Length: 152
Image (tube, rainbow, N blue to C red):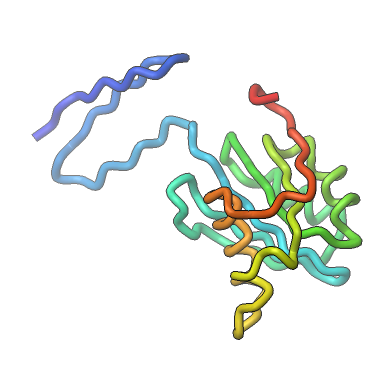
C-alpha cells in the first residue's frame, strides 16, 4: 500500500512516497551530524552520531591538520556540530575546523564524569560519549565558536 505524506516546513515543502511494506527513512538533507573528537598529540578519534543519536561511524587517524580536514570534509551531512575537550590542542583544532562545521564547542574535561570516571577508558567510547553529551546538552562548555552556514 502506497500513500503520499506531505510535510510542511517553514522553508520548503517535502513530499514523500511511503511504501508501508518497506522501511521508512526520511532523507530530506536536514540531518545533523553530532561529532565527538578525542584529540591527542599522536592520534585522534572522531565519532559520528546521526540526528537520532545512533552511532554511525568512528575513525582513528594521526593528529595532523590535513587528516582532520579530510575526515570532516568527507562527511556528507549538511549540518556538522563538533565537540572536543579542552586541551593543549583545542585552540589549534578549533581554528582549523571552525569553517567546516556549523557549531564547535570546547568543553571542560573534568566536568564530564561519564567520560573521565568511566572504569573502562577507551578513545572510541570517549569520542562517542562526547558526541552524545553534546547532543543532549549535558556538557560544561568552556567556549563555543559559531561555524559557517545559515545559523550564524
